[in-house]
Image (cartoon, rainbow, N blue to C red; front, side):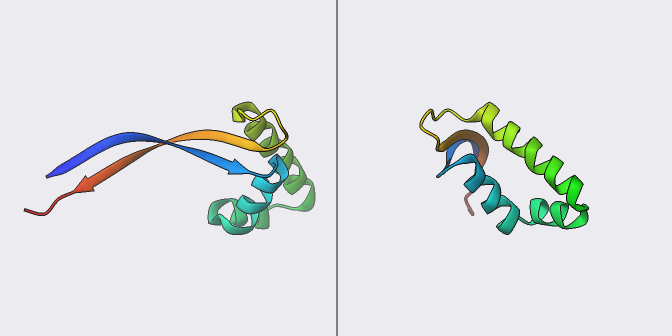
Length: 78
């Protein structure tokens, strides 16, 4: 038996730059993308990502609070 339910998670970071630093350092796809780019490309990507987080940021105090939806799936063995 399976149950699937959409859920929300609020990503919280100290600042947009902190968000970028965490993803650039620890999140594999972002880390690898930055590593594959020359310095001008890295700067452009960083700028684009900071613009992206600003678009979804609900906080107004300099921190980041951005909601993200995920699908929770629970399987129960019979």
